Image (cartoon, rainbow, N blue to C red; front, side, top):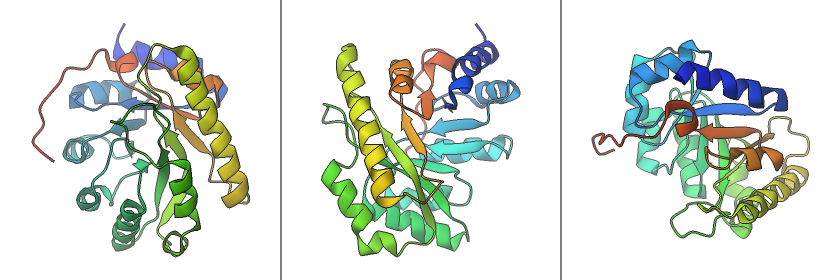
Length: 229
């Protein structure tokens, strides 16, 4: 199956469910991204800032780029001029830097708050208490150049479907509660990004509005060593 065929089949599967497809293009060559673009895909996810910037410069400018990995504060300035969505905001400090760099670029940057839902130490994210504390903080309330459009979470890397299902379910319940408590009147707070190639069907069943798929589109990843960023 070609990249174009994979895109076409996925869109047929998920677009009727009103779920957005984020094509995870990290480590993939520009040619593969262009092939997906030619097949109609417009949202791409990267997790390394330098790689993202290089691809942004080489590819069509109507692509919506998502930063889907852990983002260091000192890297925000490189993507602030063009990034469509930062999916993995896991601290108030990072949000403050995004707000600062967005102001410098005279734009408002959309963000998702990453919630820690996995039973793994290697994952990033806010816990429930930290999430509430951030949304209640005076620092957050003073920010004018960021917009929180939803939540993101990564489930445990396991074959136990019940565990994955429960983690996604808990995140959906949290999302609904946060919407009611903090964003009741804000139509833009509507995204729940959860689900990757191994578990996206479970995520969609639990209410995901955005899935991040790499190998399902591009095939298994070949590790390419980009320069340190």
